[in-house]
Image (tube, rainbow, N blue to C red; front, side, top):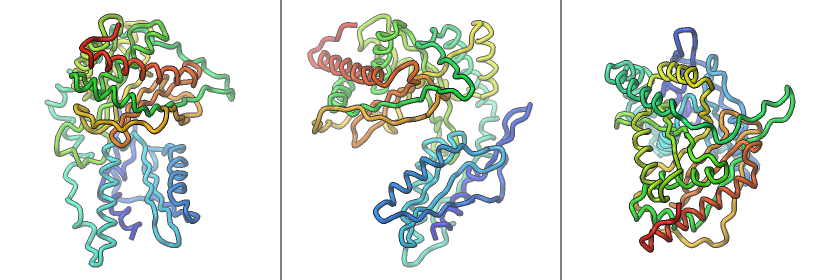
Amino acid sequence: MVLGCLRHLVVRHASLRTTFHEDAGGLYQVIHRDGVLPVRIEEAPEGRERATAAALVEGFQAEEPLLESEFAPRLAVVVRGGAAAYLVLVCSHVVLDGRSERVLAAEARTLLAHANAPAATDPRTVLPPVVHGPAEQAGVEARAKSRRTSARSVAYWRATLADAPPALFPSPTAPAPGGPSAPIWCGRLASGALAEAEATLVRSGLGSGALWLSAVARVLAARTGHPAMTFRLPVSNRFDQTLDGYVGNLSQHTVVTVDTASGTFPELARRVERDLMRAYFHARYDPAELAEATTEIESRRGAPLDLTYLFNDVRSRPHKQPAAPRPPAHAPEVSWELLHTANSDIKLHVRVTGSAGRPLLDIAADTSLLSRSAITEALFAVERLLVDAARAAEHGGAPSP
């Protein structure tokens, strides 16, 4: 039954049975009618079903698929006593974006619920037909309107990157062959004070995402002595209702420069919110056109661009009126996660997530540039800045620049 549901999902969504081919003409998707996609069956010890599923996810994530020769999904079923307890699906971010993951999870739950019903129905009749897949999306991207959108976005990148400030940190020293390399550690701060400060500042009219980016930029500027910095911003690009159920990767990046040199914190946050909206509007482009533009900019600047700083507010809904946060049961602490054992393509990744309606702030960094103790200091500095700004907003003033 469970394998039948997985088989239906893979047949249903062309992105899950796609490989990629690249030559001098560009990158091409090859959609296969069939093929081999193994499913791992893992028997879990009693009471360890969830931990077994988590271990499978970690193992799958450590092994990036060869996208030119094999399908991207990694599938597993965790069983206990012959009964399925968890489904695991891990896929390369090249193939699926975050919204796709949620679509697949919802569809899997629906299929399994119907399969378990007393009068099980044909899975093909349970879900609506897929009307927009990779082929349809390729057609959309080839339209004249899409080409004009791409041209405007590439022009925005040119204008933003032409005067991009220098990197906050130097490039990490390349390790000797076989030698050590700095890991990427992520510190996460869950703080009732942060939640209350965000709620107060949003009620005062400031945008939520802009608050976090402005505060982190202020803290980094104070630490490095560089007042301006450029961030990449992932954007989901689900700009049309027909794309709500699309399973594939529509995510692209845009860029924004934050200059903290002047004005109060509320003034900075308002500037950043305006610039973020403009940046998000220019996040749909032809990758080949963008690659050509960035090469041209690097040639003109005489140095490679540093696009290794990321900001991502991954909360799925606007945060205009946050719920009143519950008081914390204990003092805030920083929890840690090792993202990569060696530096990949980021120096710094700032991410805002949420749990039970409360914001969580992540700062991940190459520890040769920002140590774990420095990450901790930065997290608590952001907390102090936002708390002070909220206190000033409540009293009708503004904190000092």
